[in-house]
Structure formats: structure tokens, C-alpha cells
Length: 441
Image (cartoon, rainbow, N blue to C red):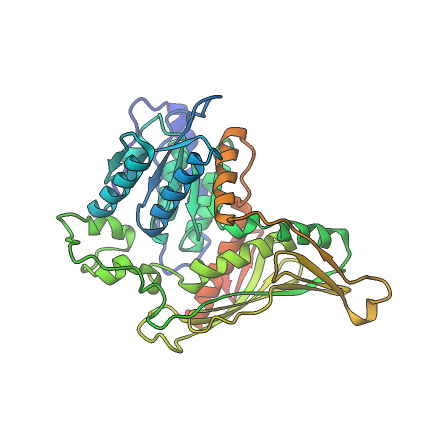
């Protein structure tokens, strides 16, 4: 994984001009967003439309990033294929760490029964025209570049959450995704697959609960040793020998080698938004989908170091997000206490309780004669992350949009980025959907 930019040979002038125009638009959007980690993203020029799996042909996919999440996806997708739920083969892997790459290769080959190619430079992987789709499980600061390059190479894309590290990157990715409408794009926020959120959306649109006034949700857990410290440090990692530290750092380098940052980057504010981007996106995404309240327009948040004083990111966060239609969402996150808020949507006439698998509707006291309390049963879909993976793979065949799409992910990133900046800078932040600009309130 390095930052050299090489175009494929034989690219057409028309393709080059189209990509140049798209990139110009990307640059203009990115310039409208202040950020503490601005990155100019330059896509590889797309030479030809990507290949689509034909009837009876396996989906040939690759994984960029073979650490914890990448390894999890690898094992799960192979298992789903063995169960007959998808006809998919993982044919290529990329990572800057030799031991992780070799470990993933060994697992993939043993479980699938055929050779799997490996690459230390992901751009070499993307040059292959026999790969239909790419799953991105790299650290957050690399998501945007990997997404943009994969789209430009004609691949369908699944990226781990959060979609990007910063808002300017998210808006550049949004521009790139919209410029490639024929390609499938999915963000790994699996709770969007839970039927209760679809049902809640239907209930709200029916007018049963009246105007949704405010909502609440949370993602809280606890640890005796510090969140994300369970990622182990391998004493055999040696930058320049079996690990390309410079390539891993990318635009956030150069820095001295730090195995803690490499293994536990979610704990450090330059590389991750911590609880907000790693945990809260899971619960915010389906709730934003259910409410359909437009873009976040004002965010204020607080963060604190309460227990885990060694972690640079906060171990307790509280967010207040206001949307275009004036709906307000309150979100709590903690890695120092596991008791969270009840997930619910408060309407003028009734409330929807979402803590269980089902939707429970309870009227406000003054509307008990008009609205009956009711429980709407929702099916058990099993592993929601597997369902999201299958949704992406099915979309690759049908060419229907995937569930966790670019519009939803863009709105989530506005809330994530503004909340992060609010915590560190001590101000409220606003976002103008008309100009796509964020500013300090």
C-alpha cells in the first residue's frame, strides 16, 4: 500500500477527461469542509467498465486489509459460500504486513481449496480485470483512498465502517460513488438489516405517532483493561523488513514506529474517532434511516476521559444531533460502563420502543383514546452482519442498490465528524446541506 499514482495503460482520452471532471468536483466539495486531517484524494483513472459476474459464474472478490475485521469477513464469506448462501470466491488479498497477509492466505487456501494471490500494494490488486468486487477492511484513514481507487478500477465495493475518517473525505467519496452509478457500494453498518427499523420507518411515514420529536440510542460497553487493547502486538513486526509502516501511515506520516498505534489505532485521535466512528455509527445509521429526517444540521457533543486515562480518544461521549426537519437525536457511548439508553423514537402522539427485536408502540397520555398500544412482531434474521454481506453479494448479481448506501453513510459521517470536532474544540458545529459546508457555530 503506497501513495504512488499510476494509470492503467491504454486508457481512453474520454475516460481520462471524465475522471478529471469528477475529480474537480470532488476537490470543490472537499474545500468547503474544514478538517484537522485534510487529504487530497486522487483516483486511479478508470480504463474500462468493470466485469460483472455472469450467470453461473462465481463472484470473484478481493479483500484489502487482512487484520481483525478483514479476517472476520474472510472467514464469514467462505462459510456463507460453503452453506450455499452465495457463490463467491475470495481470490486475492492485500496488506502491508507480511504475517497478516500470509495468515489470511493460508486460511483462505485451506478452506477454499485453491491458490489465493497476495499483494503488498493494493493498486496492483486493483489492476486485475478478473476481480468483480473488493471488500475494504483497512484502518479508517485509508478508507477514502481505497474506495475511490476501487471504484475507478471498476469494482463493486463494500467498506468497513465508518465510511471515512473525516467529513471532507466522506464528501469526496460521495462524489466518486455518485459518479459511478453502475457500481454497487455498501458500508458495513449491519444493524440497518434489522427488520424493526424498516417497520419503524413505515410507522412514522403512516403518521401514527405524529411528528417525531426526538429520539435516543446508545452503544456502551465496559472493559477492565481498556477498549481495543485486546488487539495483540506481535513482537516479530519489523518495519522495513516484514511490515511497510510508511505505507500504512499514508497521508498521516511520517511518524516513528509505534506498535501500539499500528495494532490499536482506534485509541488514537489522529487515526480514529474512537467510540463515535467505531461504535455509535452502528446504532445511529438504522435510526437515521428509520426517521428519514434529512441531513444533520447542528451537532454539539462532549467527551471525557473517566476511567481509561491512557486512551487518547474519549471513553465517555454524549452527542446531540439536530436534523433538517428539526428532529433531535441524543446518542450516548461509553467504553467504561455497559448500561446504555433505551433505543426509542418519541412522537407527538406516540412513542416507538426499539430495545427488543420488535416495535412496541405506546401512545402519549393525551392520545390514549385515539391510538392503541401495540406490539409489532419482527422476524429473527439471525446474524445481521452476515445478512449485510449477503445483501451486498446479492446486489452484485442483481445490480439493485445495496441497503447501507452512500446517502445514508454521508449523513452519518456529518454527525460523526461534527461531533468529534465539537468534543475536541469545545463548540457546536453546523452543516449546510445546500452548500455541503460545515462551520463552527
